[in-house]
Image (cartoon, rainbow, N blue to C red; front, side, top):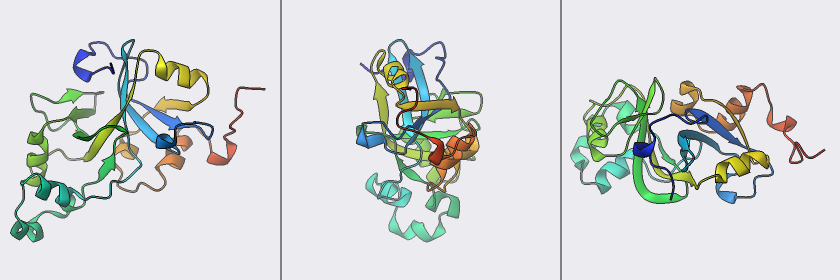
Length: 200
């Protein structure tokens, strides 16, 4: 079973870190992906891809959830209309999550680090639609999950690089260059990566 955030009392060493896919990673779900890890413990790990767009918009989502009448759409703030909806990962793809700044707190909000929280209830979606949500947020459908020891094995096999996350990259609405920008946090360019790294 994949770790849940509620079960995590102590922060794992990957909590609040980026995972950056190496070229040799075999799983097609994660090619050129940047994943923000929210929970990591001996029970497993959970995170969200932050650089792959969903084919639906936040407005589509609100309409689907019966939270928005068509007549209100023109009056929504630009920030609400442009809120990113991303592919969070291949697990539970019908389930929604919101990564957001810590200026919004509900009973179900879980702090990931000092600045970023995760909320997985409809309350935050409603708050965002009413202009009462957090200063910065990203909506994600689905998540990436690993069982006990699985992520550690993938790291040992050079499937991923990891580095401290950047809030700016998490919430940036420009997705196309997040992979390059995440690598740049480590002083690396995509060209410098080798599928044979560590196998000299």
